[in-house]
Picture 1 (cartoon, rainbow, N blue to C red):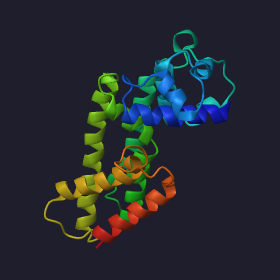
Picture 2: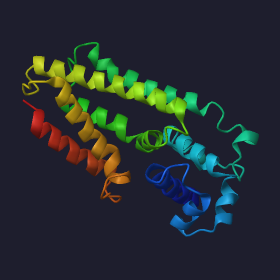
Picture 3: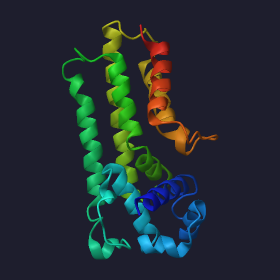
Picture 4: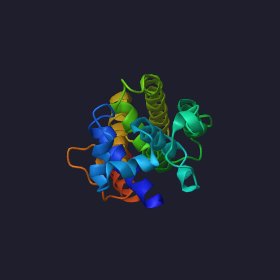
Length: 224
């Protein structure tokens, strides 16, 4: 059961990201993993339940490892009640944790540690973030929240960059806004896009390897 849920998670995630939720049918998901459409319906009552399953699993890893009653029917079970609030709360917790070292001017927090944590903020929730980005019409409330969340995350990274420049740990740059944008885009590329929606995806690259490559590039480019 877990293996099939993992297959459904991966196939549906890629389809919802690249084809879009509205244009993806349950039969498309079944075709991607070599199962019958009827087999998918043994696990989920419909496409919306699959989307909710992916978003739930993204913010609560292992949620479906426990024995559950199938097919999953959100309306009847209440399993996805308050899912949007749960997603927002998870993102807010991440942002609060990432903000902690700004309070003491990053006194014992190196540039490498900051970039590592920023990468994790992006990579740990790559699937949910990309699904929201690519399906604004179907997830309007989350999309509106996510836009604000991204702006706040960008501002945090820029504040860290300014601090490291003051401490001579970051090379002098003419414009920290555009430098921060380059950093965040690099983190997003290696943390999200390279595995899911790049022009040429690298599905086999591990999160650990992607992080290693990304941090090496950024530190080489910006560390004083």
